[in-house]
Image 1 (tube, one colour):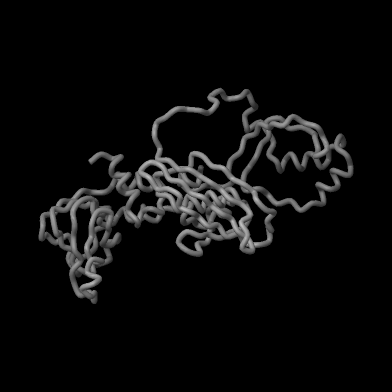
Image 2 (image 1 turned 90 degrees about the horizontal axis):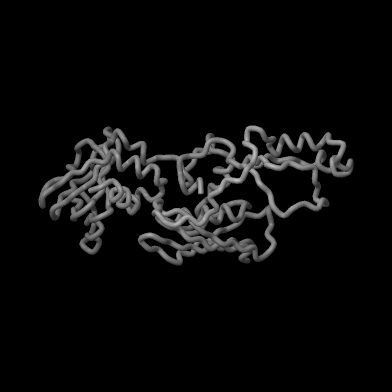
Length: 316
């Protein structure tokens, strides 16, 4: 089996669907292939765990001191994409798992179990993650709902991304602001699964406050594939970011710029300033104010502040 098929397989394992694609690629490097015949013990009760088993092909059954009635016996049957065992060598198996047919498993050895705990858009360390990543952490309410604060389009996209398997990435979206919202109130994002295909998935996200939909987003996700390039390929001639001032530096400079109206400078100086989670450097800084007539376009460099976790969904 080739690496791409292993990565795609891992992306369908429920246990791994909240990991970024970068983690799946790393796991694919370390999994081992094990084959079993019908009747073979895959793991035995009481033995030390040697890793996590993922069923690639075939069926198995969980046996042991389990209180399961006959009606629910099918819950103990394991098939493709199911998983079992423990990721640490200090854990022991709590039941026998026996092959019911020829069986192929991918096994992630216990020494690599930390790969299943990657920090990502699904599970970030709030003490280390960037301000942007902290904003995109959403608190689940139900299986398809999420709640958070007020960067609506970004958070709606984050909510949608959490319901799509990690091998698909957003490639287009449309968003609509329907009603004025209240920044002081929580927002509930409800994700509607419109389509789940092998290569594409589509989601609609409704943001509600006080029971009213105030914002909606429609997003399409696609598995990474080679295709046509529709983006402008010529890089515009602009100064390097190292030569430009940040928004914060520009603000400090404008406060004492005598060319700007005193009323404007005093207003900026007394306004509470909150740093943005994204650093922005304008390529064509100017001395315009809100009242100035300027061209309806801007060129600027931008990047997230702090260190982002290794998750393509988050980077998108």
